[in-house]
Length: 415
Image 1: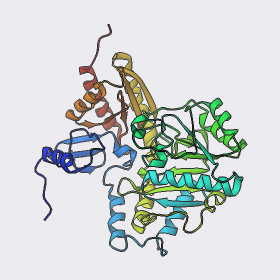
Image 2: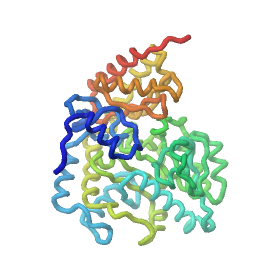
Image 3: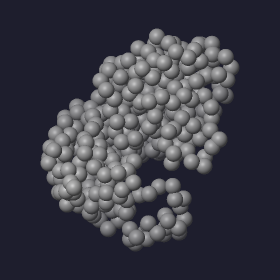
Image 4: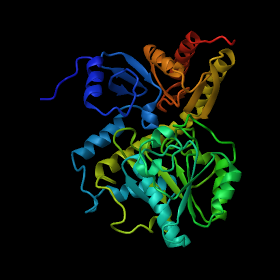
């Protein structure tokens, strides 16, 4: 018999006793979600301003996506890739038509998609570019976040991600983010097969590069016969006010890496999209996943992506993001605690005027929770704000009121 929780405290104590301590959650236990709202075990209602790290762009438990899940679950959930299914080909074509690519390779988690992109870039480097065996290099950038597998953290500059997890995989060169000169110098190495980065660094604290950086990255990659590997797992699927953040500069990556919101937060689905030249370097037995491209995931992903188009979530993210940043910038002008506001669409952050080691941002997020809004700090003094893209203008103003009210209580006076 499965036990039933009686309180939030009991849930927290159970996780603490029986789970790995690899996360540090806010002290709230959630049991229900709908649209932009979440409810805790005791029934208190909150605005969700994290969206499961931008996985729930379409809102919690979107009825169309849930219907697709339930209907497909009644028919077939998993075959493995040992056999064809009646959903995978449809989903692959849907993805290719949707994003403008020749081929799609579906996996599960975002980290798996990045691992897939690494393998594809290296395989292309050896088979097509002619890089000598085992000498391929992928250039990545500082402050990146692509997951926490051992390969991915080999390219990380976050000490917390790397400490006590070595030895690390070779074949990565790290350069500064948003530095065109460094990129040009690094990509002149004939053994470079890919340049791998996020168009906006979400986990790092919503760092937005200078205008022109994405287009220059595409130009430099093309000039040096290097694959442009764009991780849009957090920035893609309308989050930044465009379908892809790379659309702001009309950039078409050679490898497009997607995850999170392509399933609307219903189950893990990720994908890598590429040209025939790149994708067909992988042959049977060289890459795969038991659950990758399963019928359930395919049905859910197609419906989740169609919802984004049908409900004009890209346009809503752009408009609501402008309103949100305008309110936050006015807050920064009037309150000495808010140092900086940055973002695009509904991927935004405020930088708290305190050290990364302080607990001010954490305490602000706890106070936001007490006032009915859920957000989380990243890198100590940065608070990321990313509500579901279905949020209305009335709701965005209500949330800004909550944030302003809480920040006002934490106001500091300069020396």
